Image (cartoon, rainbow, N blue to C red; front, side):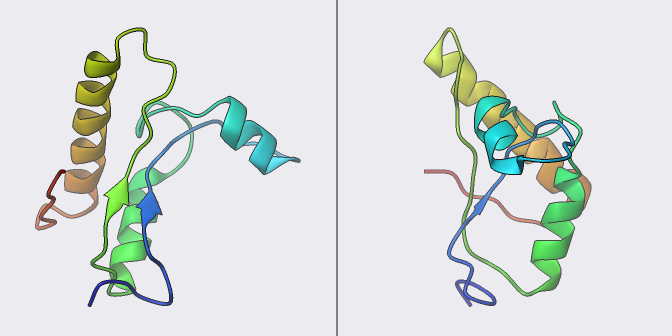
Length: 93
């Protein structure tokens, strides 16, 4: 199965817990998984529970050095995924 319940991809980003305009904060205060206040591990667990087996992605934004940003994003995503389920198998393109 590529996706569950019509989900084509899941974006793993973190940020502050907010009241009000979520999209404004999601765009302006985006962080890597584990660097904000959101329950990224819980999100991964909930998505996995649906049977989802499609791609996860993370955006690299605001890094002074893009390559270092990619490495940081990869590490943060791997850590969150392994905390959610040590059996998750991830592949990166």
